[in-house]
Length: 75
Image (cartoon, rainbow, N blue to C red; front, top):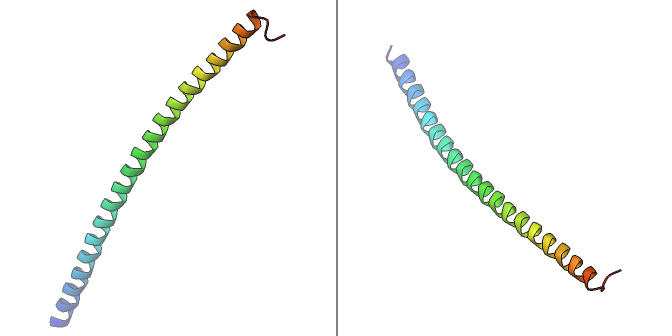
């Protein structure tokens, strides 16, 4: 009977250690996911800014081309 009790206590200790390890692993994984999501949001914001700047650049080129045509610089 003492052997069974000792085996059960050892098994319980191993299971508790494994459970604690899993909780730590899940916590660090969630932190990494949050970090990556923040980086994704930052990159999306930068892409939107670059798209806006690209649109402004294209508009400026169209305006310059129109002005050049009006001045007879382009055929």
